[in-house]
Image 1: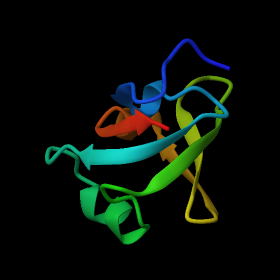
Image 2: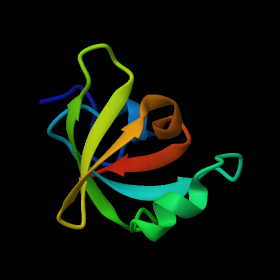
Image 3: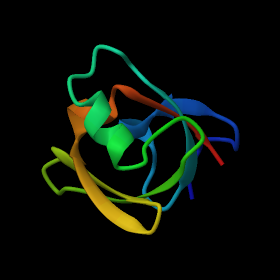
Amino acid sequence: MSEFAVGSEMTLADLPIGCSAVVLGIKNTMRSCKKFADAGMVPGAVLSMESHAPLGGLLRIKLMGSSLTLHKNDGRNIMVKLS
């Protein structure tokens, strides 16, 4: 599925399609930090990568039973651990 080992830390933008991860944290510099916290993206939340947009600008993730789309630049500010 991927060349990453379980427990590897990376940004959400780097998470391969089909992989699950646990949110470790969101960088304080992110302008939409509260928006993602309101959607349930907090440390300890489990999510999975559903797809990357064909042109690479958007990410679609599954979080708490809902699909969310976010910009890849925002995904670079979210640290996750592969599970």
